[in-house]
Length: 250
Image (tube, rainbow, N blue to C red; front, side, top):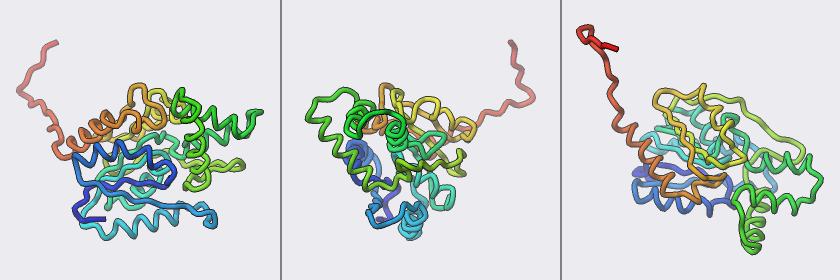
């Protein structure tokens, strides 16, 4: 990572990185941004510890703390890293990460696969509809292939037989949590689960009409809210103190 990069986008789901490109394009017009990717091979065990170690090896050479961003499981990795190495993190922005941060589209998919009497292909079609809304048949087939690839190559800790959970909690660094208003995976209840852990400088924002990949469908709006958050960190609003000589009438 270049020492001039102030922002690092995390990606542990290579099959889904196409959905990050519109937002990254908008952000790169505002600030220097780098990307860090982790590829989970079929021969490796699912281990966040390995990914965290590799991420730290990358960040420890930076000459300043960075703004970390990630969507879904990539955001979960950023959350775990910020808890472990807060001195390396200027701020953390989580997209589609709820108060129970391990809940991602795969956890939702496997839960349905386990309990619903339907085939894998039928469920993938339904999952495409849940994540992206109504699409044409060619696009549905294309998106199904993307999701199948993500099931095989991402760092997501979930399988048909086991779904991992992490206890809720905050981070000592400035935090922004973003979600989609129409997301059925990380819904409003999961997003509001962050409220007990938010600090004064933190922010919780929902994208109107956004689904799970709201940063793909509404990149300009997401970019604006992220950069506004960064601006508040650079130029915090002064606190207002009332002196003893001020009288307030009601």
